[in-house]
Length: 119
Image 1 (cartoon, one colour):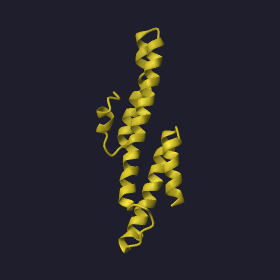
Image 2 (image 1 turned 90 degrees about the horizontal axis):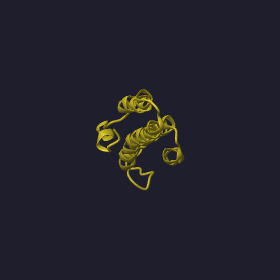
Image 3 (image 1 turned 45 degrees about the vertical axis):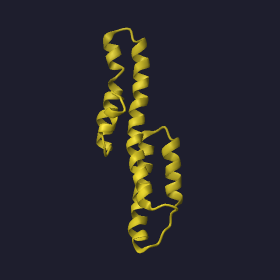
Image 4 (image 1 turned 90 degrees about the vertical axis):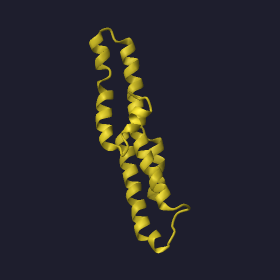
């Protein structure tokens, strides 16, 4: 229980994407164990079924990637606004493109990046 609660807190508070994703993964792993080991036998350890918490962490995992891409986009826009050449304006967006390509591999539903008007 403590690991799940600590993970939820870190997912919300951390600025580091890899920390947020690894904490989502850790919580998911523990929730799956609780579901498969205890809840299938009728032993309830949480205030809500682990399936519901699992769904929240799976959603949060995708949301972490989307928020990271959005933050990088804002930084890129600021850099591009003060850039002196077209090439430097274009280069400001390179980290965003990298975050999108690597983030899509991490997400269950990569269409969320486009649906949130991030790109």
